[in-house]
Length: 266
Image (cartoon, rainbow, N blue to C red):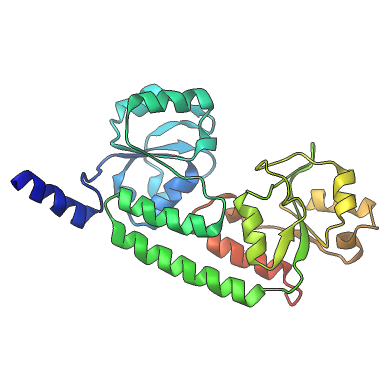
């Protein structure tokens, strides 16, 4: 009877029957979420891909994007893994399954899913109240952005990821949803791949009103096609905030910057 009572008490206090103490994050965005939840003390290892939050500088690395160091991971004895599927190859994902380490898989396709997953991660960490507070704050900001930037006719936007070859984002990618929050529509929203390769001809055919890229040279290259609405109207816009590429809580602020960038009244 005592054991049953103890399990119920742990569930009420921590949000799970067993409080976790050793967490390994297998994606930079998930590492950021743990930091945003004020729970960096639970992390014992992270997967590297770019710059880390300052709070995590001294943590052991368990590999880099697409290449997990399984031996190092096991040496850290994690009791919870946070996984974004795209950060680990299919073969190693199968290996992880066979290890039977509790794993939370996060792959949000919309900003609403992102806020829900932040709350769920907080519960996994045994700190549900922090998750509820942060998720409520982010949802409120998101609703405010939708109301402020809503348009009867969505702005047609081409979001360029790379130029050689030419890549964009598909309709199921969270950046596509961020555009919708800003009253815009991804001109390649009908494509299902997260990062489909497209042709210049396809972009010309869809005639976007705005072209976004994170590199000025890539934007300048579009001036060779003055017939495109975005070129004719001078709407070749530089995305300086890299936060759109990391689906953590900070992505809401990055979306606010995007909305301001493409707003006609900017």
